[in-house]
Amino acid sequence: MTDGAEREASVRRLRGRLGTRPALWTGFALVHLALVWLNLAAPGYPLGDVTAVYRVWADNAAHGWVRMGIDAPWVYPILAFVPMAASLAFGSAFYPQTWLAIVTVLNAIAFGVLIGRSRLSRPRRLAAWWWLGFLALLGPIALGRIDAITVPLAITGLLWAAGRPRVAAVLLTIGAWVKVWPAALVVAVVIAARRRLEVVTVAGALSVGILGVSLLAGAGSNAVGFIAEQAGRGLQIEAPLAVAWLWQIVAGSNSVQIVYDRRILTFQIDGPGADAVAALTTPIMAVGVLAVVLIGIRAARRGAAFGRLLPPLGLSLVVVLMLANKVGSPQFVTWLAAPVILGLVYRPARFALPALVAAAIALCTHIIYPYWYGWLLIADPAFVVLLTVKSLLLVVLLVWGIRALWRLGTSRALPSKVDATGTRMGSDE
Image 1 (cartoon, one colour):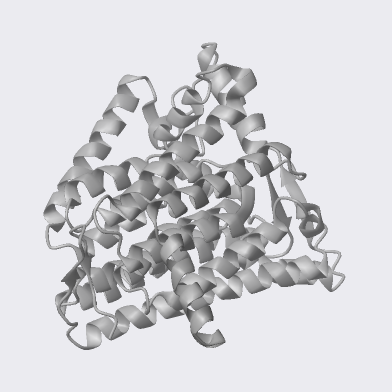
Image 2 (tube, rainbow, N blue to C red):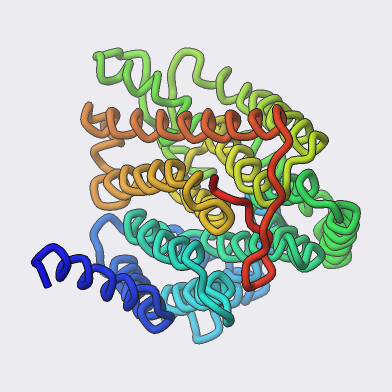
């Protein structure tokens, strides 16, 4: 056997070993152990929101002092309090460890759904390894915020959307009442699915039920107070739209400053036009979402198959929420995992570019936060460049997604295939 043939055989053996469930679960364990260690021990206080904010809210409620979202307005939907309160299960001293355990278990459930129990297809192996790589590139923030609770719900919901739309609607709606962004995925499923009425009915009924329980608990207007709380925020420094003001600071402007908002607990831009742009982000976001929805409806009406339509539609809606957001926190990057994983499962070749771009966005985010976040707080030119690159990469994802949706609405898509787990898959011609 020649050297070339030996190398090729070795590569095939390696691929075979990496494609097994034991290898995937070993990778899952190693990545999550590393992320847990980074959250607990790395510099930059990566678990700061969990230990200094979530734990305080949970302790206050446990002592009967104040229940956020019920007794007082809150920045999050009401179900966000469930994992925060559950992390007190082993006492306040073990709050961070319990939080990380909860997130890891949820990720493990979603990972199990992704790789399935029947024949492990190549697209699902690829998607599973991509997710692990994405988590590793993103770093501790992948586990250390409330968004980490919603991501496995979103991944599982999207994977089950084709065969179990009602279950998918439940998972995505619960996610939306933890952190609003999965509502965009509910919209995407409604547009792409044939059984859309079931999705709308389940999502609507569950939302009414959650809202009703909140009102019975005494929430009153605080049950939807997160809408007003978000609307009142300023332009956070990580937001893509804040890049223009950060470059003014780099250029030496004395009229622009980075300030700390003690009410919202974030660093924001203080400068000419910043408040006006912050106020415009909501209508800009609404227009962007409406435009993507209309393009998605166009594709659906012209016969785009579910497996071809849902991944780029979900990705485009999520990226609009990120680009037109006045907050732009680093944990928002976790949102990209759900639609990219779905795209790799359905159409791995076509989703290679978004997968690479999303991974690059994760790496940029990890470099900025948490270890060297202080450099961004002083608008160091290198870190402003990094944030600019990250924002431009998000634009690339949006352009790719809209282009894919437009092409789906231009010509009738080929029929979808069905993989061994019952998931409908498009061909990668």
